[in-house]
Image 1 (cartoon, rainbow, N blue to C red):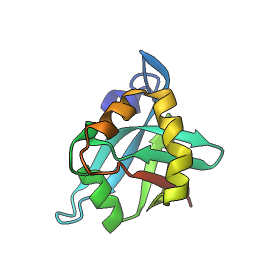
Image 2: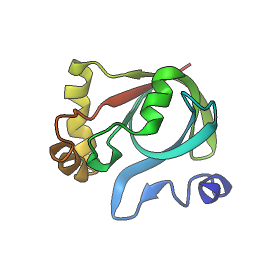
Image 3: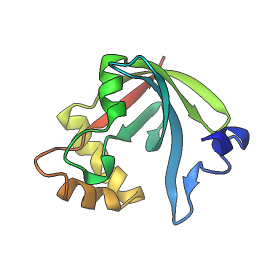
Length: 130
């Protein structure tokens, strides 16, 4: 993450094998600990809409950052050189149905992750600019 910050995302801002898979840095506060954390996440952007998938690589539980955002939804993200204040919310079923194919399009492993997540539907989190 330090290299991402030092290079304004030129290094670490995308996955070389998947040029459409862009990465942002998500700041979040521990729901129980109150500890400030940062997680690099692939994201989908369409105009002002920014979305991330809480995949945890197909594990049966949600990632910690997902629980942290539910407890503390007001946070910041960094895309390249710019930081943006955002408010996080879980996508509705209708929004997820529209967005999920876009995630699979830029990173096909999301399809594998969903198949291996057991009964867990991988949530999509909308990061609304504030």
